[in-house]
Length: 260
Length: 293
Image 1 (tube, rainbow over the protein chains, first blue to last red):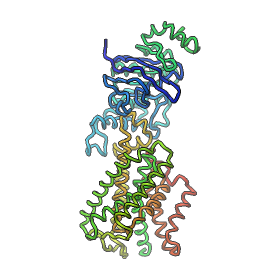
Image 2 (image 1 turned 135 degrees about the vertical axis):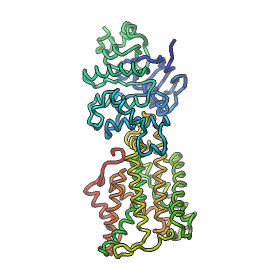
Image 3 (image 1 turned 120 degrees about the vertical axis):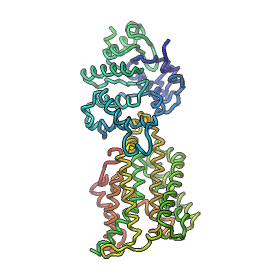
């Protein structure tokens, strides 16, 4: 049995009367790419926000690297190594690409205590300057470094958000629909980017996805969420054959013909 | 030339006095998105606390400004505690609640000042060597006016460096623009809010201390200054410190020259100019705030 990065135990989450998560339990192993699938409204984003700390679970526990973080505030979880990208990219529209990364790296340098006051008060520490170029290269935004974020394409905004998450050196990266709204080329680039980042950085990736080509090209393991319940977890080929999953997708949702 | 120079200096002195109050108000609005009515109260506490340490001694400028700085630190600590205990509870609520809460805080401060220092007028001597007049362009102007103008310009320049040039300023602007996104970078946004609130109060308090020798010290000075500071903040564009600086200068000069040319109705020029500017530019002269650079 390999290392467990994240363990979720019997998570329940209510929004007033509505039960968004109903006893969800799962474990992520170190270094795997786990894809969470399920129809819209299944609770995927809610589960991510319970892991990242935007929302707190009503019941159950979130254990990260052996530490109970169920009630931990979100910024501390980031410092512990949980990075997150949102379904609609959250970026700073009025900054340039480079400036956004400065902020992200400055934040990391700050909480990593790499900043020395007063020496670094009026100019970024060397770490920030060096790392900015490295991450821009890694993510493929070097030629856009001076462009204002609000003028970036949708795909590039998501890329920048990912770059800002990488600046925090995550050990577990949560990606909420990384290819949502992308053109086929952008989708292909994003899949390759995630594969490359994963093989270089050796972190654990937990992502949600609707595009079944993306799911099967990335996933080491797949978990299926259906109206707040986890109905299956396993290797892609097992999931493909699983009768419960076929029931969920083929019986009620017609657009998942990748399973047939 | 001589006839214009004195009102110019008077206008700039008034402008920098109000800017010292408005700068913190604008900074806090820009980052926390709250209008802090109690800000004028902290300005007044800065005046009274400085008075309490100095009384009628004419200190050397160094000692005087050290005491002002110390009073700023004391009040900033009180401000940080108040942010944690009171202000923080109102962030999620409708802004009307925040206005009522900070106005209540202002009333508490005014009441406390009346209770502790009384209703009578007090006066603070200028630091040694800064109390007389200086002759520039054949006009005698109060030396201390130059101190206030220099202090206002210094605060404007330092704040600009801090917010727009320093790495810390980038984080502050990020937190102002999108607190959720900033938390996602591992930043403790609530502590930034506390620090900015306290720093705003520090600015108000040292503004009060620096301006104290130039003012009649009374418990009503908080209300009069907060109204003028609000005017300057609104005309400058909410949350825009550079805008507040320029707005203070424009309104200060309009007020000063207005009093000369229309002595029958003193003080009206400030409000007339403010109303006129806001009629033409309802969002103030400069719309952008801290978060949008």
